[in-house]
Length: 563
Image (cartoon, rainbow, N blue to C red; front, side, top):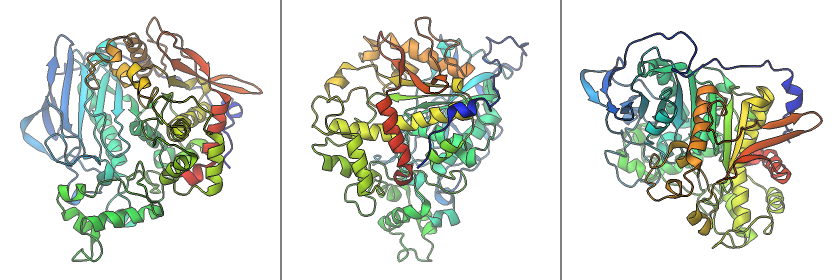
């Protein structure tokens, strides 16, 4: 059983780390003029012409290729440098294709295997010497799809006082990003979706100054699987510091089962057989050559969730990151518990009802526990009994329009997969960096229609408040355009402040309370606290003791849930 990190004992042993001033033009350092940045940027391998947005005074470059097309022989290989194109200036005024997810049944110009593109938003008055903080956003989608693609970052640039740069990326998902086997290790690379993200971070390190950004002040942020990806980058290569980021924003960190390669050979065999590339189908005996010879549509036909061996119902998530012994060296719980991570300031949190959008409408404990076993197949009967005892039928508030065991199931899956990983990240940073370098939150801003439908405040409800109305999707008439509108400047400015200063309070909205760090005090006891976001009631709260106890249960079970 893993032991709780001893925060108090470690605090006195860690030197205080302070961030340097950042955020041109609100910076006291002597200003270097640098070169004015036009909408045409020369990356060496390609020139791209973006677009200036007025009156916002923001430049945007959309759909810039950051790596070679991961097709044909480059399938299931680490990303490679983008090809040279020095004969023309390429248009960067429309979004590039996003990567194929489970649910994509047809290829198009907007959804394709050739998808390694990124977008940059920057102040129009930036120069190559501006050294603006960089917000590097990794979208979510359960490692099964790119669900948060193409956010419009114009409003956050404006609200920052034109003092930051925003980058958003695509990465391979589903079978194209996370198919795993020793065959791939021997003739390719594992976890290529995560390697795409890492390659994009290196791209930012090399090129972001051309857009006015500071390569030494990059904060990686993400929601859901994007937040899980932030955790993976903190733990990458055993926590090696590659000077790629100085902080992390973790919104509903997604920690599904994270298995060894040997445990996923069944998946590779199924996938190959489904596209007629099994050992008996490959003419020269090379399954990988056969897979790389198939057209995209054929591979996509087998890109869907199935059941784990011994189970009859499909897992909620199927193609996932694996422990490869290199980029990912151990379970995330182990690495964060042991401090084998990049030790940077973190803003981390979740939503009150994380699990409601994922679980079945369970009518009894059998449905509840079968769902948990379907997604964490190594849980034993004894483990399931412990889970059932921790999540009784009458232990949680009921949700409208749902059956008796829905609340227990939703709370179990939500805490296991999202809330408790965020608490583990908070404890780890508090122990191995400093308690005042991590800020935790619970998002509890209700949408009336969503509550009435029986989902409470579900997974990643905060997106619109972070990025603004209509910037993450149509929002005309939605709650953030009407009665929840006061939450937008409060939430957005906390995030902007953290990106710029590694502290959410420096440029918080004038109506917002002080966001206290995770640990309230340290003596004979410690008291985790978080900011509760709620309309007209945003304030600090203590983390309930019973929730902490349930999170201890999940940490104790991490070896069998493989998290």
